[in-house]
Structures are given as C-alpha cells and as structure tokens.
Image (cartoon, rainbow, N blue to C red; front, side, top):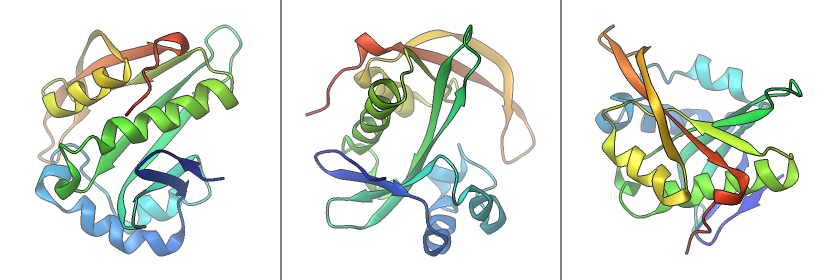
Length: 167
C-alpha cells in the first residue's frame, strides 16, 4: 500500500532500496542520529511496517517506520524516520510523519502516537512539533550513539485529534 502526501510518497520498503538507504545512512547528519544502518538491518525490515520515502520526482530520500502496541489497555503506535541530509529543512519530514500519522489514526485506529528523537536533536523536535507532537518527558540514557555513549531521548506524543494537516 502506498501513502501519498503533497510532495512525498511512502511505499513499502523493497530490497532494491537497500543500497541507496545504506548510502544515506552513512551521511554524517544521518548516522549521528541513526547509527548502524547496514544492509543486514535494512534487509530485515523488508516486508515489515517500513516505508521508503520518495520525493515528488520518485527520488528515494529516506525511510519511515512504525511499531504498534495492540494490547487494548495500552494501544498506540510509534514512528521513526530518517531523511537524506540534502532534504532536511524543506518540510518533507513533517509531511512524511503527518502522512503516516494519518494512516495510523484513520486506517489503523490508533488514538495516540509516540515518537522519541534524541533530546538534543532540535531539528527533529521542531519538525514533530509542526505535526502536533508534544514533549512528554526526557528518557534518560535512552539510546546509544555511534561512539557507544548513552544519550537522552525526548518522548513526544500526539493524540489523533491533535494531528495538524501539512501544507
């Protein structure tokens, strides 16, 4: 299933996307926040709840994925993504997140979504705020960076009725 925004298309990740995503994952501004994007990691994602992000001309510019908690008392979904450095700052991240968030709330019935950027990833935090996510709190020593250092994460959430449409 493809999900379309104004400028981005989210399509199921294919094996043929892996080499390009490995290249993108090696960019300093990507690997800083997403260490460990390897062929093995990406090949394991093919067929899962993972989408390639294509720009309007069909250029592969990133990856977005989700996970779901289906227990009735805790039901929610989480989102994670990365974009090629050359596409940072152009509104594609918020658009991709909004497209997937719309699918998760409208089509999959989730009332709450979470996202958890690094606490010092100000660009990502601003992007998620544009979609309607709000800071919930700091998750101390939440993720290990490429140098093996434990770093804080920021837990953010969004209720379905708070989702902001993107231009």
